[in-house]
Image 1 (cartoon, rainbow, N blue to C red):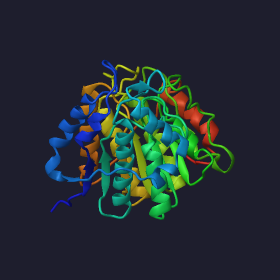
Image 2 (cartoon, helix red, strand yellow; image 1 turned 30 degrees about the vertical axis):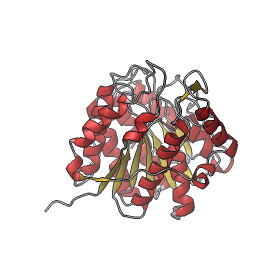
Image 3 (tube, helix red, strand yellow; image 1 turned 90 degrees about the horizontal axis):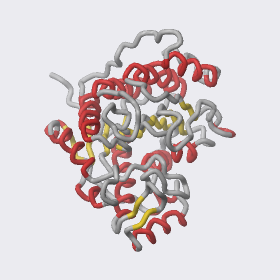
Image 4 (tube, rainbow, N blue to C red; image 1 turned 180 degrees about the vertical axis):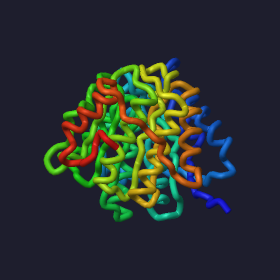
Length: 351
C-alpha cells in the first residue's frame, strides 16, 4: 500500500482583501490560479488553518516602528509606501495573517504533524527589510517563520531557499550575519532590487551562509534546475539544515510579464523535486514553501501544480542532470559560485 503523505496547504479568501490600484500586477486574482491547482488535489491535502502573527513573532524580525508605519498607512489607505508597494485598508491585517500562517505551517511540519506544507498567501514577503516595506512586500513571512522555528521549536539550523526571479534582499539582509540561517538564492541578475551578486556571501560570523547564484535573462529549465542540482545540493549537504523553507516565487515562468526567464511548468516540477529530495536527505523531509511572486496566471497554476505533485509523491527522486557545456550560461554561473564558495561548501558547482 502506498504511504499517504501529510501535505498541508494554507489558503484563505481573506488574502484577497489586500487590494491595490487597477492594473497592479500583485493582484487578488493571482490566488485564484493557485486555488485551481490546490482544488484539483484537495482530497489528498490537509488544511492548515490561517492565523495572524502576534507582535512577539513579528518583532523578532521587524522593528516596532516598522509595524507602526504599516498600521498607520492602513488607517490612511489607500496609499503607496514606494512606487511599487501599496497599502489598502486591510493590508496591515492581511500581512500579519500571511506571516502567522507561514509560522503555523512551519511549526506543524517541525513538530511532525505534517510532512510538508505549501502556504498560498499574499502580499509576498521576501523584499521586506527589518525597517522597510518594498517590492510589493510588507512583512517578511519566511524570515518570521525561521525565527519562530528557532525560538519556539528549538531548531538550530534553517536553510532558506529563494527561487523567486527577484533577489530576496530583505531575507538576505536579515540573516547575513547569522550562521544558523543559510540563505540560498538564484534569480535574474542584474534586475530588481539590484542585490544578489556572487560576492554577497554574508558578514562577520555569517560569512559563507549567504549563497547567491544569479542568472542572466533568458535562462530556462537547464540553468535553473542545474543550479539547484549542482550548487544548492552540495550547499545543503554541508550545512545540514533541520528544516527547509522555500521562498516560492513562480515569476521565472516563461509567461511572466515582470521578468525575462524561460522556466516551464516541468522546470518548476524539477525544482520542487530537488527541494523535496534534499529535505528528505538532510532534514527528515521537513520542507515548507511560502508563495512569493508570480504574475502570470498560467505560471502560478503550473507552478503550484508542480510543487504539490512533488510534495505528494510517495518518494523523492531528484531529476538527473548532465554536465553543462563549457562556456554555457550554467557553466559560467557554477564556476563563479565555486570560485567564491568551494572552500566552505565542497562540491559546489559539480553536484
